[in-house]
Length: 163
Image 1 (tube, one colour):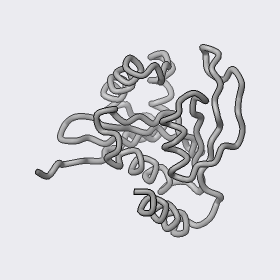
Image 2: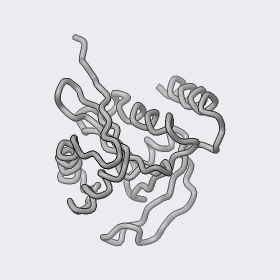
Image 3: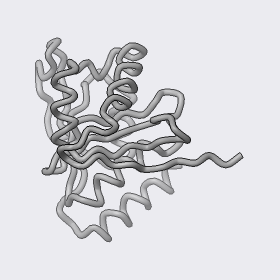
C-alpha cells in the first residue's frame, strides 16, 4: 500500500499549521517528557520561523521550525512514525536553505542525540541549566559552509551507509 506524504511550509509570519504542530508537540511531551515549551513561547517562535511539515494523508507526522540563521527551534516526529526517514527529510529541508544548521538537544535525550549524531551533527558545547527546568543541553551543528552540492552528497552518503 502506498502512503501519500506531503511537505507543507509555513513561511515566517504564517501560522496556518501551528495548531497541528502544537498538538503533535504536546503528544510527544506527554508521552516522553521532552518539548516542554509553553504555548505562548511555542506559537511566537513558530510564527517567526520557516516551518517544514510532513503530512501523511491529513495527519501531521513531523515538523521542523527553522530560524533565518539556520537554527532548528523545534524538530518533532510522531513516535509512531519514527524510523521512516521523516526526521532526515526535515533536516534535509533545512539544509536546502542554509550553509550550516544548528540546534540544542537535552543532554539526557539519548534518542535525539543518537539521531543527530547519525546525521553528522557535531557537539559544539554543553550548556549547564539551559532548560527552564534546569536541564542541561548540548549545542549541535551540522555543516561547515561548504557548497550545497557537497553537503547533500555527504548527507545522503551517510544516510545510505547508515540504513
